[in-house]
Length: 329
Image (tube, rainbow, N blue to C red; front, side):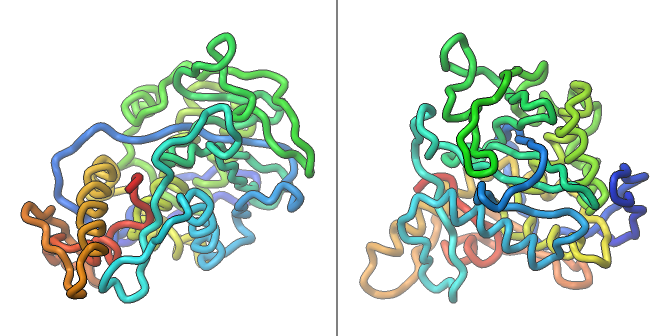
């Protein structure tokens, strides 16, 4: 793992190339199926809509962290996020289930283009942080995967949105030609997650890919990039903390490493171990932390990228080093 420079796109342009940077924490686990989903778009961002918003090129590292934490707060099931002996680190929990006919099942998020008023509006499912769809510049709602709404389309609660303080239906709902998982996105783009370098330039390009929605390849790449930028960072603490510095005005690139991919693939497994330990901790009266009889093994990196093994045997270790948000309880 190493750091490198990157050539970023100027406002309104695509980036020329991406590079590598270090990950803060890596976890060694068997690889399971991944979680994923699509995005959202619009014309000009409006404060009246009240969505978490990140403005590429204008907002900085601390703004990105606040943006991710605002999403984490809004998808929370509202119950306790406290973790015993975690010294203030908290893990939020997604709701167990959501009614797809209810607007409470979804969260809209806006990413504004660099040096431009245009933005893409992304649609997240609160119960699992999947990216579900996005609205393009023609107000078409593009969604990935199948739906069980009228005519096999998304329910209105998903495909409609607040726009300048008013609830509006999309003009059209269009299913993408690719599926909602990483396998489908990587097949269409011909590029794995480990080729994604997160920088202000690549995020800006992804905004335009989704805003224009000109081809399946561009949409799939935009979805792949935005999935790393938003839901995975909401789920995983080291991903948020790794991306934040390169969103600053000094720039740089944070690369998705194989270690990142393993953490992402196993978010459900990580969540289950954490939830079980945390539940037992809150039942205890002795103030001690419950130990996992079959702990998972992880790796941390210091400032010089030296690897250090960590046994994730308590809930507070998950809270301190790995999880921002847990899948359910």
